[in-house]
Length: 434
Ligand code: EPZ
Image (tube, rainbow, N blue to C red; front, side, top):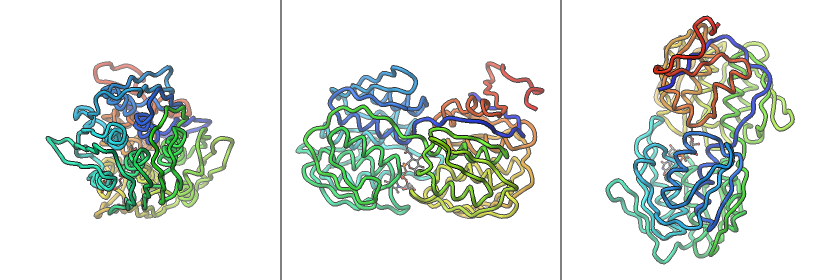
């Protein structure tokens, strides 16, 4: 397995470009299954999660081609085999969002029930509750969700809120299913994430009738048929937020292109509180640290609140602030695998239930650390860039799931990161890391 060797103490400078959003591209790939024909998606990031989902869609009988790195063509003229295999779903939970589109289009689908996850408990009970409300009969068989609606789905009023607020992929599944249901569906407490709004816009381009896009109150008038689409995926706000935090933790000044500030207001607000400047700049922004890092309290919330997918990265940042910060995780209360690893780098973090007290330290010290999930690995890379010495981050396959060649992008703006593999020792010698 590849690992990163990161030389610390380099300020990030100049300009970095953000890709299309993984968390918009995945449900939008599923949405193309509703459209009888060839759909073309633009700005699809080149990531392992996208490749895995492409394999799943191919298994359904829908050829997937990539004319170039960031374009994808999905031919959903026919769906021969509405079946989501365990071997693929276990690699990528978001595969569950084929459930709604295939149930609506094929009136029967079997999808492996997603298993455990390193960021915590992730049931799909709300997805199933919403689909049942549309008239689906659902049962579990050998670890597979079997959903059927032989006479088709019927519109309904559905409250989709859960113990942690709205559900992103749950909203995606139910909204996609409702597009082909008879009559009107109203979804209350729908997720408002920009990725869900992008999905709704894509569905409307395919001929769906969805109103209230971007709000918690969605109204969907069912239609008989949806067509293929040509759609450009929105920029990745989590990748952009990660680069913003990376600029600040290294004391650098970075311009981030293809970044929609509107989608990052809670994050920008926190960065300014911490002591950074964030200036709009063309199709992006420029971020820089002014003075010392100040402490700040963060509570993760559904959009437009502070995103849980930036919690780990901001914990690494606040570990170097002058004072104490409190981070409360309200979406995935167990999402703290990075805490022990950051403490190995001389951070001073104390976890208490779904909260971490971050007592700022003057410096982080390099150490070998282990990535456990996508965003935790981004936090460890950031800590490595700020630390004294050379840090080794193991299991970087996690980061490849959500960041396209991150080491190349960061090296292009001043970082010193080598991707190495125990079998092929190459790249930078110890001396080069300083
Ligand atoms: C999406 O996951 C994202 N994944 C996650 O990003 C992100 O962390 C999450 O939304 C929250 O913003 C994709 O879009 C592919 P949820 P999702 O359903 O939809 C509970 C990343 O790093 N819940 O909104 O699976 C659930 O356990 C990934 O890119 C139920 O209880 O998250 C959680 O506590 C990680 N029952 C909360 O709701 C359900 O049926 C929010 O989960 C569904 C969810």
